[in-house]
Image (cartoon, rainbow, N blue to C red; front, side, top):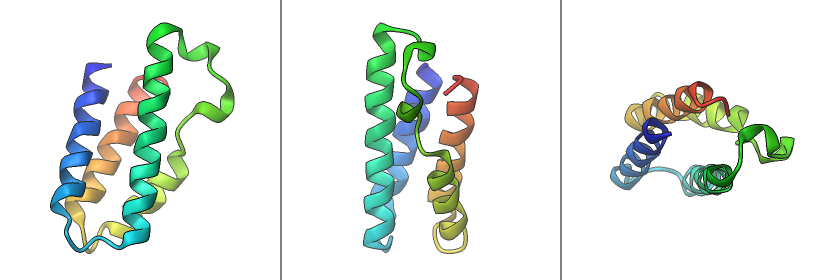
Length: 92
């Protein structure tokens, strides 16, 4: 999951650089990133198959955020999509 961790770090960096990001969008992304990090921490000890269905990150919310941010914050939108791709590759 090293690629996923690097991709998440890239999104954190983009969020730091996005100084004019709407507070609601920033809060949503920070919350979702927290959910993803907690999921990764719990899966280190066990397999993804053992995780409850509600533990999976909110892909629809991330994709929606990417679409909303595409015009004003293309770097953040691209980083979100990279996280979605990495999650898919990791089977999450």
